[in-house]
Amino acid sequence: MSDEIVILGYGAVGKATAERLATSGRPVRIAQRRAPVNLPKGTTYTSCDVLDAASLATAVGAAGQVVMSVGFAYESRVWASSWPAAMANVLAACRASGARLVFVDNLYMYGEQRDALREDMPLTLKGNKPSIRAAITRQWQSASAAGDVRVAALRAPDFYGPGVTLSHLGEVGFQALARGKRVTLVAPPDVLHDYAYVPDIARGVKSLLDAPDDAFGEAWHIPCAPTMTSRQILAIGAQALGVPLRLSTIPMALWSTLGLVVPFMREMTEMKFQWDGPYRVDASKFAARFWADATPFETGAPATARSFLSGQ
Image 1: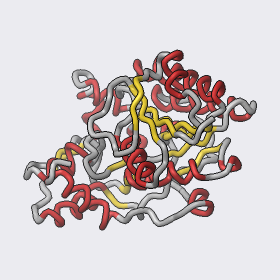
Image 2 (image 1 turned 180 degrees about the vertical axis):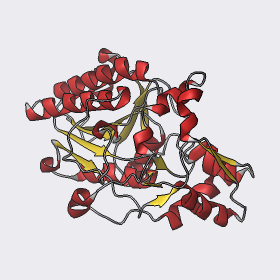
Image 3 (image 1 turned 90 degrees about the vertical axis):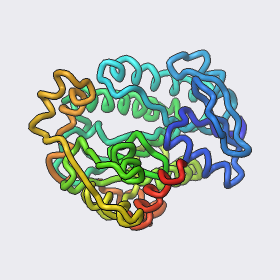
């Protein structure tokens, strides 16, 4: 087993994690189906499909640790087939190699809650996407409990960050601001909602990679800046750009109707519970063990807004 870290998936979080690790001199290899452009200096690439157990096992090889930061199309049908298979393959590859696994996860598995989300909340059985995330949670928990694989899950809410387009605040939010366009949000703009800053998620991944084995076998919530509404966050970005915030939204009452013709809205409808009231994350467990100084929106929002001006 080597010191190499294999990152499965090079989306926003995978990219930010690779950059952070490479900067600190860690040996990093990116593994996904297509070769990324502009890999961080010092990193390498291996072709890999997480849905192909053989190619995944080859990609993991003798790596000491694996970061699972993959994503699939935002469709329940795709999730139902792809997520359990991907998790089974990754666990098998890590079991065979002895590599530790850091799984970058979301918070869907808790389902509808009214209190701030905690790691000890029960897994839901309701909803397509939430129940799928709960099922794959049980997969890695079972493997961990059996002593087969050392797994730590880093859970984050909706995220945002420099150059991040696939986000509630991304292409339709900060990028629209930078281009002088009207912001059009799907979700209600005036509901308090926690957002994680992508560089902070990458920092959290590194914290777990650097931690001893006693940090594994459980889930951790990434710290977020003090909760704001989407409108407040975008307003900070607009102020940094010196532009007015012109904002429209799609009323939640129309989601079901729009879902009849717009697939994405159909998928959003079952996730209303994230947006019909304050959505907060309790990260006190992570803060007590690692760090609590999440990037404030007063820093993250301007950096994100300006990143779209420069085309980064």
